[in-house]
Length: 131
Image (spheres, rainbow, N blue to C red):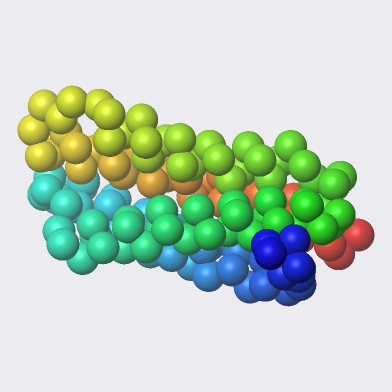
């Protein structure tokens, strides 16, 4: 059943752009709350949830495209770029929180790492597509 579904690469590119924008918004929100020494607001938590969902969806789209034979030359950067941020948030969830402000700092750090990985993966993917 799933083998009959064909995903065009343009879906992956569009989802990557949306993921980049949401990662940037999440980074700004978590950085502002960390700077103010506030616990994470409901809005920030919602944006982080959307970010993590988009990371999973984008990774699954990428795996499907690899299954279809696209992007084999970018195999490792996409696996690292897709799965590492998910692993960062998973590790953060397992860490015991000393207090809410510490959790905000840790979340801001993980979100910054996620943004870097999303940017790196988007840059490498764009170079491959354009070149």
